[in-house]
Image (cartoon, rainbow, N blue to C red; front, side):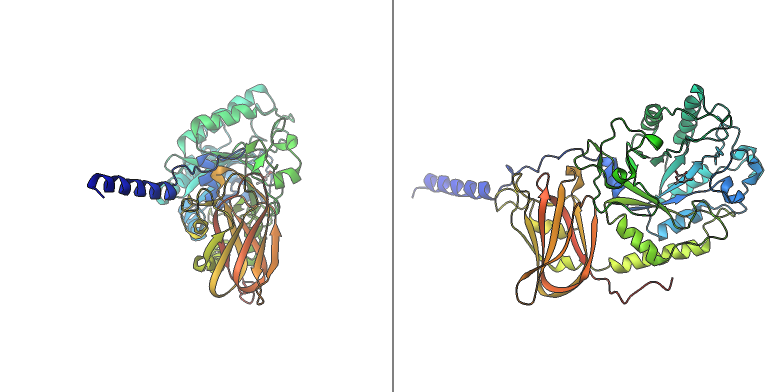
Length: 491
Ligand code: FUL
């Protein structure tokens, strides 16, 4: 063989190998249907945030203030937003949303477009500003900050007139341009409630104008309302997202409040809905939204249950922890939150799936292409996922173990930047006789799905995708064991 022939043969051989192993022609699946923005993906990854209802109601023991409360009523004796942030951090929460203005119209900051604000109260001689303190505390620690500003206002003199929508936008503009964690507001919370103002009139809210104002001043803020546009109300205040929970929703013709879709629809979303508007589960740690001395926080077991029925059902959890009359989170609540976090950390401390050899019935592209391989579901890289060819809608994924494992919790995550695809799946395990046995079935997955099952000891677990609108793209499967004897009811 002469030299140049050998050279050509080698080149041909190597380029053949390269072609076979190359993934260059294996493109990721096209996004399916409505998909999240980058800000919505980051928001969903926060999983649990803290809601703080604080204002005149804290002092009058009401839930809905009348709007005619004297400003002096608001008088926290030792407000410390750094304490709120410290508690939220210890509870593993990434953001705090405060009621900057509830239905009584009182503003926790010196809003120049209202006379019913902290400026008129003798608290700190009228120089107090809760939003400023919270912004500083959040900026110092990297905690995200969001604001609740109620359109319903029982104090604003122009409520019920055309002019009020403008006043409301000026109010929004003031808060959204002056405050935030390093100037950033991660979520704007719009309550749909629309009652009567001080003149007995109701207001026709200009939602497109409100949303445009937020988008102009805080383009990355996720806007909450019954129908989004950034995220939606889950349809109840009990901590329960739907067992089927789509992050997509059809909102044409609907509005927040009385014009919203049925609560069942909000709870479950719409399969292949037109817009990406994921569910947010807002629930209070106490019976009321505001602090009342005679009420007490939920138990750790109740909070764990809520975690499973909210975060575990493709929703974010917004847990309300109301500051007390001092302007501090009560010890009882902070201890409860820390115990809740401890319990969560213990449940999810050991992912047994990390020990598995993962194989799949199908993998996208040729079999040498590793980009979308099955084992991606057990690594920690959010952006690596397992997927299959476009035509494959019902693949299976098997986790095999060298030795028996015992588990009772299964966690699945779809790679939502490509949309929500899976409609139904079930889980099987290998029994002692080498036979696959059914363990659990469910419908949607979305960002995160947690299933609790009977305690199972096995050497293999199989996830069977039964129905999908487009080829599944799964970025995480995890298995946990939470010994039932380890109850946390003593809290
Ligand atoms: C409701 C309000 O009316 C309650 O007072 C509370 O703020 C809750 C989070 O939203 O619609």
